[in-house]
Length: 615
Image 1: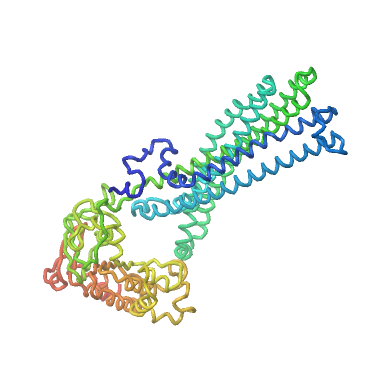
Image 2 (image 1 turned 45 degrees about the vertical axis):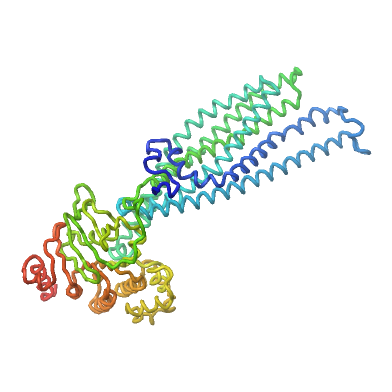
């Protein structure tokens, strides 16, 4: 069974092409959400039809009064009259009761429609956001490296909301407005075709206005969404780099940049509002002109007896009543135009293919021993950005391997390939003799722990940050890992101990403390493979030693690949791989490399010279 078959979604070959209609492209994503909720759409449509029908009946009781009750005509048989009441008074009571009853039914139908539509809309947004958020997490680092975070967040939050408006509220309101307009014109044609022709003039006039304004609103909305994404990106980038901004005194520069993007967003917002307002007012003018036409030609017809006064009254009410549905038509058409833009931006994200994903035949990895092998591995971030060339090495279970070399030599890329953050363009990466592409991503990464140069901590309690390393970890396991990593040495100063909130990205902890939390998180994970990427960079001597002590405990019994320039850590390695220009130029133990007196020995002498000189 293929991946597409197992998920119930279209495969890339079956999916509509990007050049197809946006609604056709969106169908595979919206259909699974809307199909189980078809009954909501049905009930909402029925309620909208009921409300529209009773709206159309509103003038008829008044026509009855004008044509019959006011002139004092006798029309009720004896059995239908109320004893002791004047016939006209009785009919006024009946007409009032009909008006109130019709209004009550119409109000209930409108309430039911609105409630169901809002529920459907919220469920649509919820499912769309879940789908988008999950999909964005599955996309490769190439997508995240090239996309602005603020724009992606805007698509998930704001654009899904505009899709909700277009596919629920606006769609049902548009249906109701269309029914009211069609019904009113049909009644007018049935009563007098000559006056109805004047009413029909609204259709081409409105169609022309809708075509003109809708295109301009779509274009302006697309620009506005782009500006909002850029604005959110500036805000996020500033807030996430607030220490750097304050350290370099760049608050004014960032403020100007934010103000510039905010002004552009406001300009486009005003343009959209201006077009929407012009659209609605154009509708008002069209309705007023048609109403004047009905009165101009209708009064002579009523005077000549071709129409009753009640008929003319109904015509005027219907034409006047067209104003509301036509306004709705204008307003909802504008929202649908915005929704179309939002839908395009949502689908653009959902159509992005993950650069790294499970193959159809991928299987869960068994408990791994940790034997790692790179066979002729080549990789590049682009056609002209080759990073690794024909890299090959083998690591036995429990071995510690140090990757050394100049910046850009490909050390971190090797760790990324083992995690399958990227796939090699040539060659294979094996774990326990199996190509890692044969394992599911989740099961592979579950058995790898990582400690980075700047470990990312969550805005949660210290306990939750450590427990994050392993789903289902017990409190005893979390506390034991924390103690082994040296977290207990600073826990006393925290006001609520392990339950203390540590702030966004661990801002309330020092660099060394953050690294010890990251080590504890890796310890509780208990993975057989450990990756270290410059875990002691930027730490003072005391913090560095504490972190190294924790790392030494973490490395015990684990296959470890480390990227580091610290001699204390490199000395711990069983094997050193020296990279230069994306190739392994030397390999062996420290003693073997020193005897060769090659690249590594030269680099080591240079590092020791810098250390002795204090630089």
